[in-house]
Length: 218
Ligand code: E4P
Image (cartoon, rainbow, N blue to C red; front, side):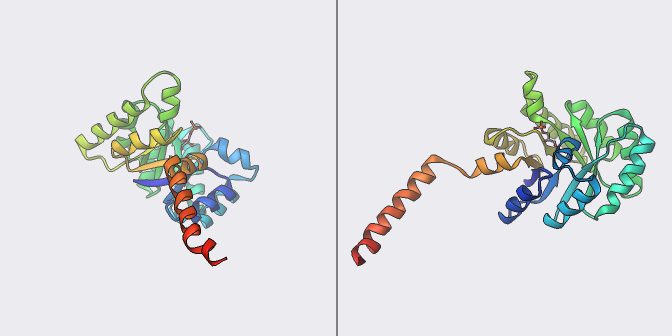
């Protein structure tokens, strides 16, 4: 399973990159806006930090505008994947961009039917939002399972990227479903490392080592 970072913050991205387990980045207009830097400039900097797919989202809503914006975003760097919202105009843009060899990530997916449409249009990635589905009282993980089953039935090449992930339990359930990619906030990425028994165990190992080898030499 590939690990992407869901952030446009350069400090977080640098810290994540140092871990050596990050395969790409997802951004969205809200994340880019928080950084206060023009989209193209920020995306270029992100591509310099992480060597992997970097999703950059269009902010127009007609297919014609999205195609133009997508072409401009794709020119920033070879790793840019153009993120397009799951609306009819977006799906038209996905098909047109795919014909030009421009890879797309269809975002704001909340149903298996939407994921099916995106795959038929030739999306490179589909992004179902697990946490936001949970928020409205529906099972987000079930959405992921359904998409994986449907894509498997027809051998669609579209990669499933689990987005809107809120914690380690989400990550485990998502991994069990066999998705290709999970995108994590830096906070959730950090949470994956921790276990109280690891901390307790390490503390005891170090105490025992010091008692045996350091204190005796004082
Ligand atoms: C994915 O590409 C989105 O940027 C993101 O995962 C949305 O997550 P949120 O629901 O926490 O905003």
